[in-house]
Length: 125
Image 1 (tube, rainbow, N blue to C red):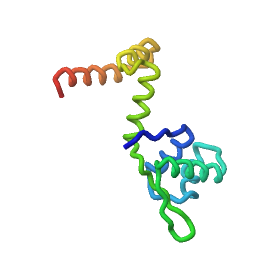
Image 2 (cartoon, rainbow, N blue to C red):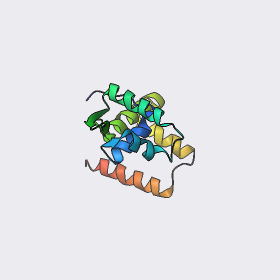
Image 3 (cartoon, one colour):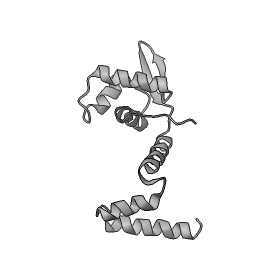
Image 4 (tube, rainbow, N blue to C red):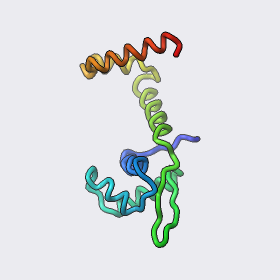
């Protein structure tokens, strides 16, 4: 599947649809209301953008449409992660981890988990 660029605002709508679908525009609006102070028209605009991009689909249900994601969350995360690594750390993970360790953003649990992952990689898993 080709990469679909999703804006930060669009990602809020996508998260609502990834959690539960299909949803009407009103249901999406209700789902994001506690996170965003958007008008219902804003949500409808974002849904239309996502439709045009091919990230979601709409099915007619009487007088309304029900929206469902076509883009899988895992695909989006992979694309976003790769883009972030490429832009910020020349596509390499080690400098990313070094950055967080220098900023004291790694807990003991994070470090233990990273060690476990590295050991698994070393074992060829």
